[in-house]
Image (tube, rainbow, N blue to C red):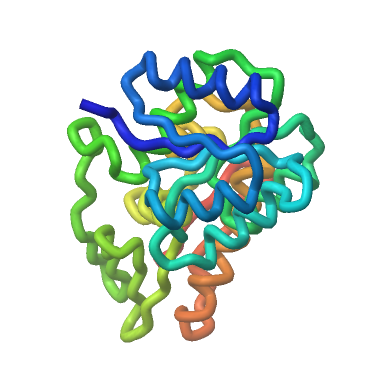
Length: 233
């Protein structure tokens, strides 16, 4: 039984094949594409559980493919793991702004790829036997709706990405108390990531923007500079 269907989109034949062979040895079903246009077409047709997407490809790059995926209804919430030889901060921010879930910088160890793949599939509810079920939470004017990744404040509803929902869920469970950036990285990514605080900042910025639009002027998410974030209800 396959652990999940993964699409690998990378124009480097050697890397593409290496990832495919190693993922299949772990029990995953793997699809391949060697350019962005074909990758997007296969994604729409096959609806994979996860997409591993290279950034630097000719004609259509990974960022463009990621944008198309996020605008395509059947696959817009499919987790995307970007492969990049670019480790500069601005490249990561650009990807996260588009909706990329995680980054892996080349060259990488296969074990690191496996850990990130498992974490992304788990968070996307694809590995149901190890995914803790989130219950509907209600406190005062806020209701969290896990099945639709939504937050309701009064009569207003905001649809969040899975990562944004997980951040808000953790802040909600700890409302009134600060949650450190390190804890958010650990709990949401499911492994010990580097201290990539900018990753959290980008997602918090998007989350805060969506919450502020339905909050009737109240600022719920507070930044504790040098520490983390707090939800004030």
